[in-house]
Image 1 (cartoon, rainbow, N blue to C red):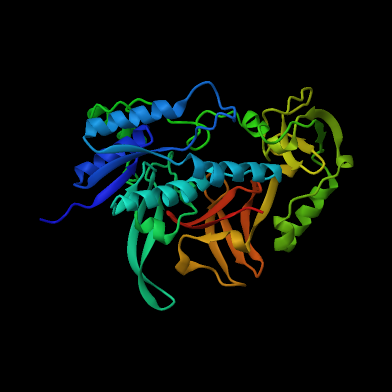
Image 2: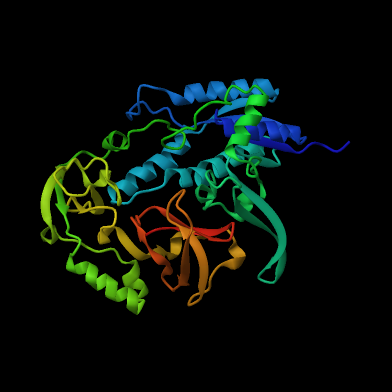
Length: 400
């Protein structure tokens, strides 16, 4: 009799991973449920609630209902080192990191995957809304399996963006059982199986930490410091230069963010720390009396100044291009990696749930330029740009 393949499922205590575990058991796999405890640092103010305790209890109840082995693994040390410390460093530099993308690359599909493999797993599985497929191809003239990362079938829940940093080696060992389903179908399956998570709301906040008020979280290490909010008018002369460059199609100029000076606008208020704010942010500025709401168009953490503009269509919010440094380029499809001086037509997004936009990749000696057909709002340093061909995510990079 052929031995069953073993799958370790990351049971998060939510409905998606619960149904993923159920489907795998139905498909005949030997399933083990593992809950990742990634946070218990009481020195950082989170909230009075303790979501991981409730989540781990729900995960255990699901495992009992499905009659699968269950255990909890404490990864809080690795999480603090690889995710939280990284976040603090990035915010200090005035960048806005994406902890969910990092959590998948560094924790779920690295530390967690190694633990799963040590338990004799053939695969790990999660409740992500995305899909994989495998074809036979060639790389450097050698035949090899190529693993494809595809968008989830549910257009409202597709989570391929969060997995944009995964490698071929990680995808080879990964299953996404609910990728072909819509969210209502997932809830229907959970209800039919009488799983405790069937009606549970989706978690919000930082990956695995739970309900976090980010400024309070950051204040643990980045001390509040009062600075000026400078409003820049929409007819600022620097925007005219940018419009000219888009005609000339100068890559460096298209991707370059405008460097503002305090004298480029008028002081309209104060804030408690430029590193608590990000491009495109509206909430938290607390400046009244303007015709349209103010949006953050740039932050200067060195001078501790926030630059803001009125309205969603303010030209300071928009750019036609961005740059990814050489060392920050990541190809999921290594066989399609662009050579220097080559270009590729793709679709791309710069944040989760953003509709895909037509774009062109331009490979240079120093890195990768991504130029968009339509100007993009609030391109933010530290976030990830991910590029696609059809439903397939080909690669990603950290925006500089």
